[in-house]
Length: 110
Length: 115
Image (cartoon, rainbow over all chains, first blue to last red; front, side, top):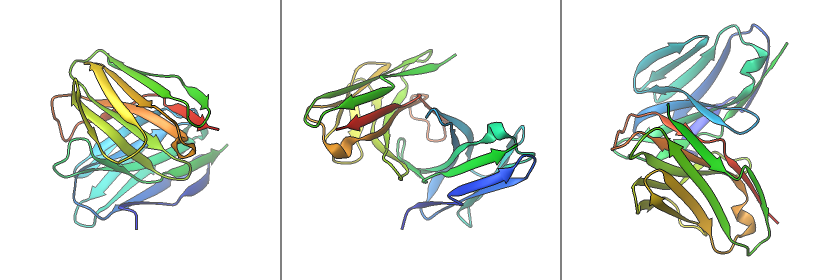
């Protein structure tokens, strides 16, 4: 069983739809990252969470530490949101040890 | 502002040949540096991380090695590539000294195909 599970693996949406990507983990963590990987391969960090909720533009990320679960929401989705979204957790007490999910491939159709 | 450069972007190498991927970070000092690999159909895997010059930790046993000859330079190497070394390699950095809750920044990545 993977320590970080993401769902769904693939997601196709129509422009304007509200999108939710889920991440569950089974280990103790100090932080959780949501990352975005574009087709060219470059990865950018969207959010780093240790509790609660963060919002940036049309993106919202939430985390429930007790339930070991995080969600990434995209409101009013747009074709430019098409990318792979990756959940990664930083283990408690470890500087470099990030564990990554396999990613969710999102395709937003116009 | 800080930037991270990684090269080459793509590489096709025969089995048994050597490998050198280079990564440099600009605009910061004493960064923590990382090498990750994303094999086909799998999530990203941490290969090496470094908190300072010549201070490198290996997370998984493998055919690869890493070196940090300068503060902002991180090199991934192999003396003899295997087919299983094929994948997408990412260099990354985070602010140093140790900051457990810091954000991590990735380079554009290098696609390695071993044939």
